[in-house]
Image 1: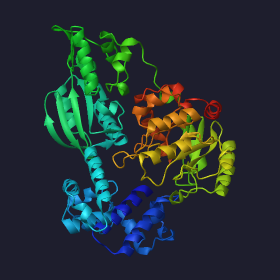
Image 2: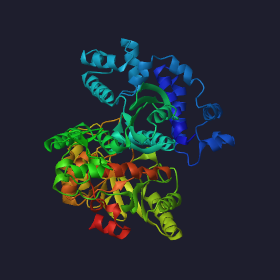
Image 3: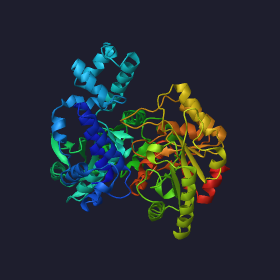
Image 4: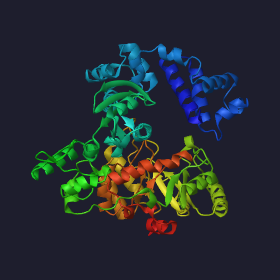
Length: 569
C-alpha cells in the first residue's frame, strides 16, 4: 500500500467522521496524519513494519496501530461502521464540487436530503438558500456543482480506461484461434474520459472468443451476450464491450467502432455519394464487398488519405484527408525531454538524481526539475535559499549522470493579482520557469483572464502551466477566456503546456489548433511527482495528437540546447 493510498484512506475516514458528527479533535488527528503520510519521503508501510511510524510527527501510538491495520486489511478500524451509518446517496453528495462534508451533513440533518438528485431539486426550489450559513449564491454554486457531477456520472479518466482496455486486449490476444484484436472506441481516440471499453476482434471460433471474454480477469458480470457482441460490467465499474467480426470485415468494424458519431455519419455519407454503402460489416458496391485489408485501404477506397484514430471526431478531418495527406502527428519517439517534474524538495516522491536516472532510462536526454515556489506552503514550496541548495544538487547530478541534462526550473505560483511568487531578478536565473495558479480559484472570467495574461506577459515566464486549473470529473476549470490568453502568450512568445496528468490534460485539445495557428509552442509536460508518473507522457501525447500537433509544435521534441533557444529566443 503506497503512501498515497494510506493518505487517501485517512482522508476518507475524515470525511466519514465529519458526516457522522464525530469529535472534532479526532477528525483533526486523521486530517493531520493524512497530510504527514502524504509528505513522507519513504514508504509508510516500511516504517510501520519496523515499528517506527510513531516517529513521524503528529502520529501517536493509536494512529500508528490504525494505519498498521489499514496496511494489513485494507480498511481503517471503524471505517465500515461509519460508512454503513449513512445513506448511500449522502456519500455521493460529498463528490459535488465545492460542497464539503459539514454542509452535506447540515443539508441531510435539516432537510433529510440524501442523494444528489434530491439536492438539485432543493436548490432549484430555493430550499437550500434558506438554510443557515448558505444563501442564494451558495445554492447557485451547489446547483452548478450538481450539474457538473451529473454530466460526469459513469465516466472514467483515461488512465483507468486505457489500463482496463489493455488488460482485456492482452488477455484476448492470448486466446487460441484469435486472428486480430484491437482496442476501439473513445479509448483508441485518446479521449480524456470514457464511459466504456470497446474491443474489436476476429477469430476462427467467435463463440469460443466470446466465452473467453466472459471469463476475463476483471469481468464482474455479463449483461448481454450474442454472436457478435458481448457486454459486461467490470470490477472497476466501467462497462466493456467485445465486438466480434469476420476477419474480412475487421477493418470496417474497427473503423466503425472507433470513430465518434459525427465522423461515422460523414464517412457513410461519403460512401453513399460514391454509390457505395459503409457499415461495420464492410464497404459495399451493390452486393459486392470491397475487401479492405486495413483501415488505410478503407480510407483510400473512399478517396481519402489515412486519418489517425485520435482525429476521428468529426472536426473536418475527412475534408482535410480528401485534400491531401494529413501532417505527421507527434509521436513518443520524437520527445527528447520531460518537463515540469517535481522532487522531494517540494511534494515529489523521489529525489533529483532518482528522477534524472529514471528519465534517462525512458530515453529522454534532458529533464526539467520544476518544484513548487514558496507560496505553495502546503506542498513544501521552495524559498530562494532552498532553491539555491537544489541548484547545487542539480549541478552534482548533472555531473554524475551521463547522458541526460538536468535543467534548473521552477513552478512559480501566479498570485491573485497576476504577479509571480518570486521577483523578476531571481526568476531570470532559472533555465526554465513554469507559471501556474494554485490558489484563489473563485474568479470571474475577467479576473481569471487578466491574471493569466499578466503572467504570460512576464518575460521570465517560459511556460504557462495547467492553464484552466480543471480536474477532470472533479472540478471545472476557471471561467477563463483561453483564446485571449493564447493571443497574449503568442505576443509574448510564451509556451502553454499540455499537462499530461490524466486528471488534468490541460490545455484542452479543442484549443490546440488555435494555439498552433497563433504560433504558440505547446510542450507536453508530465507534471510527474514520482518516477512512475513520468509515464504520464503517454496521456499528454494522446491529447497532443487529438489536437493535431506535429513535432514542430512541441518544443520538448527539440534537443536541450534548441529547446532553451526556442523558449527564450
